[in-house]
Image (cartoon, rainbow, N blue to C red; front, side, top):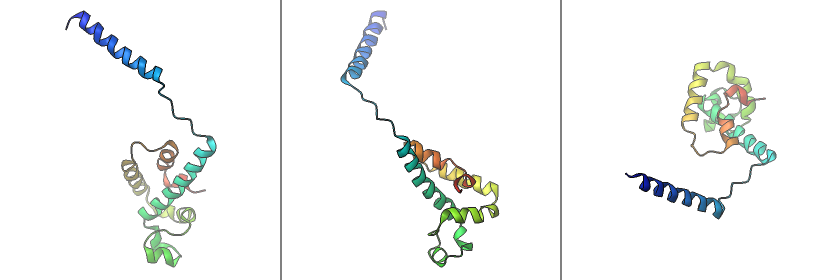
Length: 124
């Protein structure tokens, strides 16, 4: 390819990019800290329930509804706090890796931050 052809192709690509910028590719507005905290709290609660169900903590739960439904339907925060010491660390890591592997690539920042937490980081 001759040098003139390379320059023409480069100029054409630059012209297209400049036109796109001039046309107004607008950035998405940034999320407010309140919205970020709200979305993180929602995803954190969902993540707690995922861990409770993955570790089958409903088997030792005191609530009949959890045992009957074979899933956590009560306070997942309290359930994790009470039962997490009985779950081996390697099992916790494997479940976390499975959750991370199943995470969509285009997930939002607050949801990603909640899903990357270890189970012990999720309860207060």
